[in-house]
Amino acid sequence: MQRRVKNTTTILLLEKVKNSNVTCKHEGNCRMASCYYATLVGGQCGPSSYNPSIVECVTIKDCNKDILNHCSQYKISNDCGLSGRIFEIDESYMKMTVCPLHRDLYDIRWRCNKTRCSIRNDLAAHKSLSVKAQCGLTTLLSSFIFNKTKILIPVGTGICRSCKEHLAHLATEWRTSNLVSTDDESSNCLELSTSLPQINAEQPEDSNTGTSDELVEEMTHCILNETRWSIFSPDTASTTSSSCDVTDVSSSLVARRKKLNEYLEACNIHPLKRPMSDWDQTSERTQERYIQKTCEIISSVLNDISSTNAAHLWKGLQTSGRMNKAFGLSHQPAEKAYLEALAEAYKTADSWDTRCQVLSTMSDAANFNVISEYIPGLTHYRFTMANLHRLQYGRCVPVPLKTSPRLRICQQQLDHFLSFITSPHLVKGLPFGEKELKMSSGKTIKVPNIFRAMIPQRIVNQYSQYCKENNFQSFSKSTMLRVIDECSATQRQSLQGLDNFAAQGGRSFDDLGTVVLTISPLKKDGENWAAEVQEALKV
Image (cartoon, helix red, strand yellow):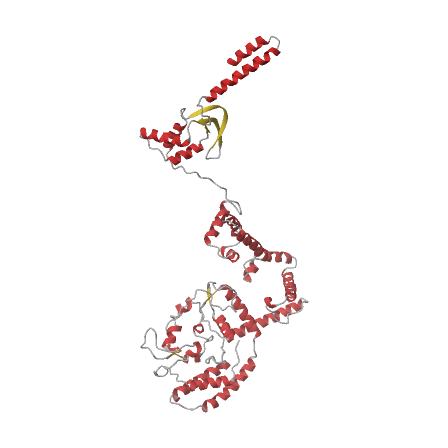
């Protein structure tokens, strides 16, 4: 989209050129004062920072170094992307002068040091400031940004993919809505061209009359060349902005819309009168009207493609995901709601085990980049572990707990200690009761009930003395106490000796004999019966 240049602006521009102290290396060397390239990009002119002895301005046509590798690095297709505000190559631009300092700053030594997206917040498709640059800015997008904001972002500057798609969409709408009449521009250019020579003749002469006259003549040629507007003055704030490309795109869009309206009229559908407004800036009622209109158009197209398979084609488009890729959508609305629900469950989980189970469900539904949009701060390690959990145990399956006992003592030492604590002088077997011994495998074994004659600490001391006398290397006392604690046994409670249970058992038989003698008078021939029973109790 080209802008109109007022006559007063051009007059001031030419007067500034004629009265300025601009010198160049054109048909002979001249001393360096300032270069005309500075009017495009700004900044002070000066000698080369790499070689201070170089102080002469040269014309752009004298710069003939190979730049193919430089253009390839920043994905620049033509030379116009290398010059500030120059978005279309013209022969007159080759006569522009550039000082050594600007050559150092803007030649093939230029490097974009930014690793983040360089698009301003008012034009960016994202709100975060930490989005990484993924591709380079093209010439058309740089031209659009300069026309929109009057701020030059060099071609090749790093931007993210979402901003690139967003800017391409904005540029298309902006060019369509700002088309002007080519006839009016041509007439204004011709009117301006007739007034320029008279103005130039009235300008006073100075010490650099010859050089200034040449520059004025060159500037006049640049401004009037094939009715293109000049971009040499920063006051005009206008650029060519790839006028041919803009015209081609706009005319192509108008032609396609005309064909579409002809098709809609053939289908008895009301044609489109004007482009739709921005979706985010329209009301709910307007959005509903847009949806209804689009539904009519799409259903008509599908029926014309295949009237018998229109419904199947629509279902296939919904499930294939190709439409999402065509419009730059990462996933469908149903999938988005599904991922949002899982992301909320992930954030509310109170442990990593639970989060890993939730993330294992998401890892198969989308890739890491998509999940990172819903779970900020997610690392590749956690995503990989969740994916491994899904492959090993399944989606959202809890990890089975496995106990892995560690055996750090010698088997020979353990057998020696077990033989000592189960010896008859330490334990006694009871005629009643059982104990349960739980193995490391989880199996439970029932063993006879026994009791120990000593407390654990005394057993440990006695065993240590025993090993010392026999020159046997035993394990530590703490390990001995843990082994004794695992071996089930009843602690001795009576203070009357180890044979107390035998005395109590004999007294029970005596009590039975007394009972027999008590009830014998109640029986017939009770004396004989009592004698037989007492004899049996003694056996």
